[in-house]
Amino acid sequence: MNEMAREKGIGKFKHKNGYIVVRSKDNLGCPFAWEDGRIYEHVLRIWEAGIYYDPEIHVIHHLNGKRDDNRLENLAVVLRAEHENYIFSSVKIS
Image (cartoon, rainbow, N blue to C red; front, top):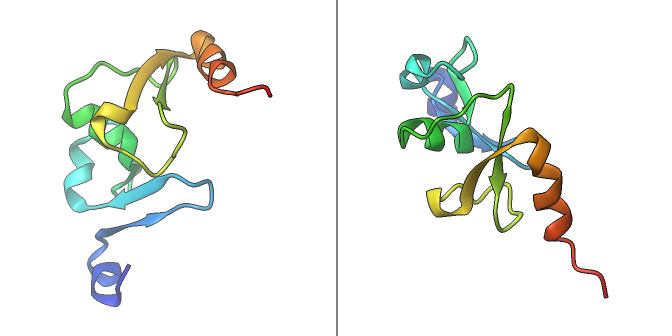
């Protein structure tokens, strides 16, 4: 993020966990944004698309396993109880 974006509190960066974090004053309207306007980009994409997501019972899964690929076609909202199946089904055993 450049210095001007940092001063204005906008921009995006890759978190140490591999997810992209977006920071914008516009994010404040999203119920999943933190108080300072930051939000994980994949959560914002799902919310902007109007897809139902409850973080207590759902996980947003990156279908290709790349946490920084937040194209809508790469995201799936799955039940937390079923998310483990997604993880294990994508592991290839040789």
